[in-house]
Image (tube, rainbow over all chains, first blue to last red; front, side, top):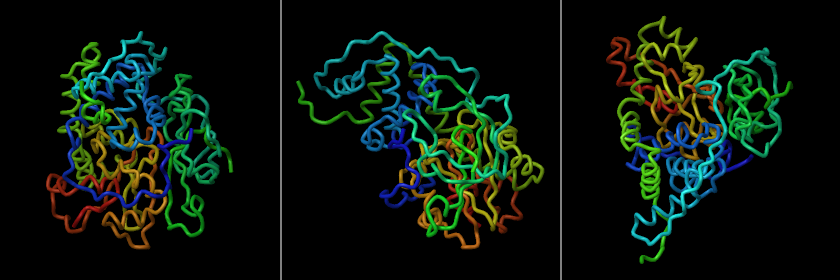
Length: 221
Length: 195
């Protein structure tokens, strides 16, 4: 699913903000609370996983994604996951926030929770895969030119382009299915190196990009 | 009754969410306090600086760090969420590595803590895979044309840490004296360690 999150190579953002070495972990107190509430939502409350969280981020509209910064989008994604699991009714957070601000807001009824029937087969995202990796360091591979309807970690800017396998990384849960509770389907993962000219054309600055691509994203080139 | 005028602020929405989950006994505010305190005080770039200072002063450790980052980092007691598999890449005069996550803001929490604003900014996420030399120059790092740039886009659960070059002027310093010189920005690759 192409979406707001897939920013690599897009234009129109202006300069990068100047780093501030004294920047604290949380610029404002609510950011720390939103961070912790989101982690608790992913890990314990909604019954959802980190891939479902990233997919929730990908489903936010542009305002929800950008307007309140990084922890603003975490908060919006946590709300979405809690609504998906019927822990909270849609609109419940907005109604309570308006009530806290002194408005006469009607809060929706608490729904019957409906968490996904899901249990991870192990901690984290690293898994073992019985079959040997299809590719080895030095192999030329092409990132498939596909835009699946659901979640993916195959960004637009590498699709259709040819790179070289640099490293075989540990096998990992496939986000494309895990985000939708359709199974972990672990795959081998490769760090694939692309030249800047392959990605951006002959006039590009001279550099290379490495990116981790799941085996099903790749075909021999 | 108050007129509905603007949408709630994120601070109000956060407070509302915490209230709703606390009322249902799904969240204990003390647990939230603990998470916040941990990432404000314990998990931050000082951890990564300690890893680098050790690597600069202990050649055997440096070899282990480059061969198996996760294990070598765990030797110093650093592990946890967003650190399942950390790969360490070494900056040299010939090759400069810089790290990004174009799809979100994946970052090696156990060694760097939570990402700073510039790392999460759309401009950094979008541009550093398109014109890294220009972006680095804007951020104050003007690399010679003879230095190759490699950008690492963290699209899976692999996390990247940069081992910066040790300035020659620090030759006489101890491991403990080196730690405060190693900055967050150098550990991501948008700066060098200042001589």
